[in-house]
Length: 433
Ligand code: 2M8
Image (tube, rainbow, N blue to C red; front, top):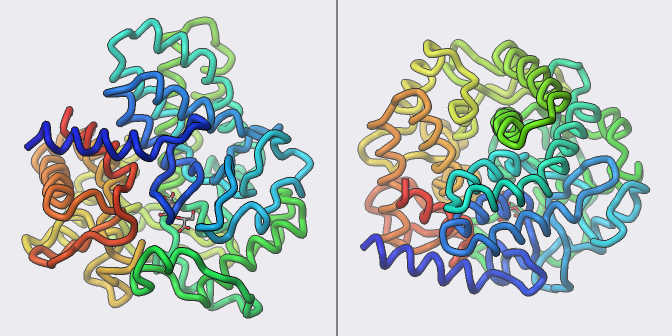
């Protein structure tokens, strides 16, 4: 079984790899290079084609802007199967944008630091991998520097996102109350996602109006972060995004130590790390819910819902042992019923939960990978095994889909795009761990 699944995963990754040296998340639905997808994909590629994994990350980092920013989509090629494309985002409006590549002017969770560490862990030839890492690591450091200098508006070690697409958890019910504060125009455009995927599994047209409106504000201000912080109706501290940054800080510290001779950067990373972990625990923990939550910087209010992002701090070793215990309890109480696969992306006990729609309930393999390693960090081996086995069962039963129904016994429980790259890549890692 294991060999067959791995073989199939490798075929998917080979087929989704493009001539330009990057992998598309999924044919048709997502025809470009996405930032956090690329990171997860490179982890899987590192097992069977080191060169491919190294290209994946090098290509992404080649699209870095002058200020260290790394965009969420790099438009390497023309394609009319995706909306909104390069002509909508217009990265050239920013004087700092890459001159070589068209991209979006928003980013995604900063996974690249810990991805380099994973590639090092997986590599058989450690010296060769460390040599490669040496050619890339400063770009990732510069990216973290960008976040801490441009996106930590309260100087508390926590960086903001200004768009739901930056979170990666695109139409999570977390954002619903923010949409209520906005009244965007009814734009005219042609959606492409719903030509590939059943509309009941995707965001609504009205939700897309909100997504586009925030982009228009950012464009009108040349993607300037200070202006965005002042004007964007969406300004959020996201626990997943910040946990990924913190986990990547730690990875960069370890890698710089292995490389040697970068005491200045290591000291800076340690300073960021200490401040971020403290800020995270002070601001994003909700004692009553027993979970980490999002914080709306615009309304200055916590957003009090439990999502799979709430548990991601385990992966970055952010909670104390006591908090970790509470967090795992919350996960098992709300998400862990025997009738369910772990881990739904949104609280299944909430009336906002939707088992079929995109980030409003389904299980995602990349989140499960983060939770698997997070649970292991704190010694919750049984729970970790459950997350891993549930992921493998879903992929085996329903194939390599983008997301899955968490209700056991549901037929055709694979939703969104098929032959999905990060589902394939992370399965390879889960089966080897
Ligand atoms: C989804 O997001 C894109 C926009 O970035 C979309 O819906 O058009 C999300 O699941 C995101 O996390 C992911 O990186 C992207 C590509 O897989 O698809």
